[in-house]
Image (tube, rainbow, N blue to C red; front, side, top):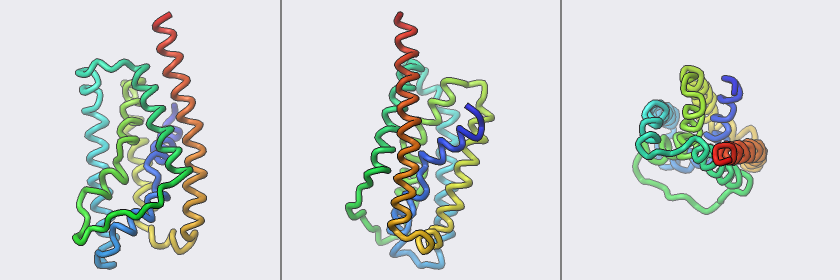
Length: 195
């Protein structure tokens, strides 16, 4: 996997376009002049969380004795569930906090969610020696996500809610393909080891 393909995968999993309505809803009761400052703060917190998991995650996997095949299959399942949610989004109303959001839910789980952590762990467990590439891919994906979320209001005006939903579903379709590939690779790894 190249730097660009890893960054694209992480970007799809972060799902910034799908997160625009969630961010705008969470910031509804915050002074509009503070929106962009809050988004930048939460994005930086999310980056710190993701980088921490990138480096601490492998130790947790060793401690739990999780095999690479199991991680690949579980990562594929998580990505598949996220992709299905992107294609068939849940439009139930989300809770509105009266106070300015801090860490939850914007940084975690909207940006640094379980699917991003699972993807990071998968990349690092399969090719640990390429950690600088995965770190660079994470930063690239985070940067693109942050720019989109920073301009959330502009994107909503440009595409409208229906346009954002259509783009999110298209990203979900791409992610389904990646998830199925991961499931097949994990199964092949397990069968190769068992055989």
